[in-house]
Image (cartoon, rainbow, N blue to C red; front, side):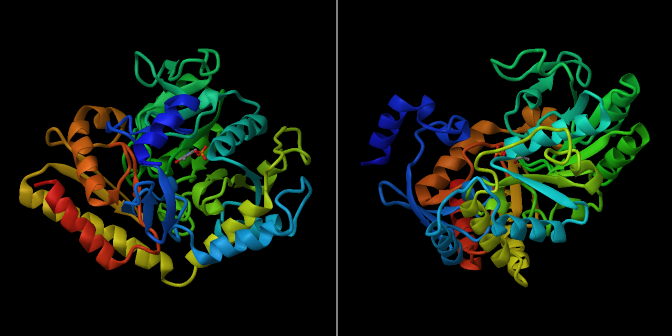
Length: 425
Ligand SMILES: *Cc1c(COP(=O)(O)O)cnc(C)c1O
């Protein structure tokens, strides 16, 4: 069946024809392509068109599509059964690997999605401190748990409103919102809510409003404020873990969280996520402690095998660094092309993540309000379709980070840059 027919049929049975909204191309218009298979840095759709993929399942596929080591690991594991609801050695192996990578993590709990990881991390911060309120940043995305679907209300950084139908004002009453990169706002929140704030949750590099880097004093400043006020710092590395740096953005910016959330890469394309932290904090988690959190499929053997095979390949010498060079090559190229054509852009790359905005006017995006004001989403939509037509799959929204894998070769990037030159002509 063609992409178009598949899409029509999907729309009959699933809202918008998809199981996660960004896939529906709402941000760029047009119909989504339906993917049949992937190999290396490429995907093939139902019309047999091939694309060089810069979305990579929104981050996880650091070794590209259908890497033989990952596929073999899943296959071999599946032959012995797909789930037991009882402990397996694979869980300890992945846990040990992650704990050995992150200095801030002594113990870890596996869950099935980033949403679960952040939701549980907040519960843990509340259990540990006996306080209710949490601080999050506008434009940071932490999954779709109720209390994290809050947006800044009328007077920014004070009142929060629900950001979704079906999320009650009560559910976000304890969620305080501050602008990203604004320590002063966070300080004020602490001062106006003394002894009430359980923790701060933050994307150490914002990757869900495009790619926005933290200013140098931002993350250390959050750490300091948490220490002064007895709150926990939760760093959400679901996207940045094993992407921005090895093992994560917290290493890059030398800041030690109390709780880290992981996801995406650690499952290598299967539904695996985790939260972990200091031993004393993790001892609060059931069955050791009184904080309830469970999961029928948590630590699933297929996910553990996929995560282990993916990380083993990714952590081999120079693999990450070479991929990071590809991200740099892409962004330097884009800058040059945009400059030569007089197109206003803001761009960044960090490790194997990259991002670029087309701007409506000169300015710099440092937070969500800037992004909403400055970013030219129409221009991005045109760019997106011009690239899709030529066989390059970028994120179907102007407010997403992009990714490269170990399978993207310098020639692939060079070809992509030629196509970008054409798209911006
Ligand atoms: C993707 C993402 C999540 C949510 O993960 P899911 O597995 O989609 O639930 C949470 N936090 C960040 C920073 C993410 O990028």
